Length: 129
Image 1 (tube, helix red, strand yellow):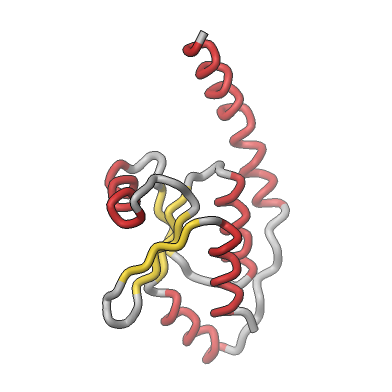
Image 2: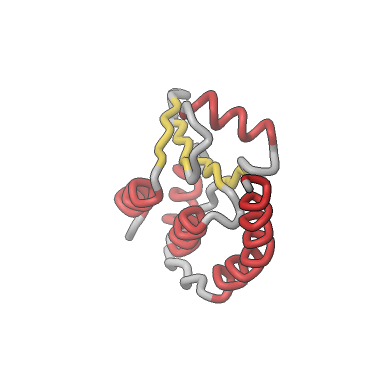
């Protein structure tokens, strides 16, 4: 019975994944417009950020939409298909739960922030105009 349930959910993921990605693309909000000088400063500040995510995770899609709306050049790390990224996520945050934002400050200190609501709140507080 367990293999049948796994097969059902795997099939569901295969069928719904492309639909979710298409919806993400079509519903993408317009990015915030900043002066070139301000955007350069935001780009420098966002250089220490990386989002560990799964491509079709609805919570990851929500965070990626916010990243796009805030015009942030945050590195996206695939924690599902890339074993190295998955291990880095596990070692850094203690779990393979996504979305998870790795925040590296100017001193090299690393923090891990999980939960889509917390990540979006952090990004808005730090980068919203």
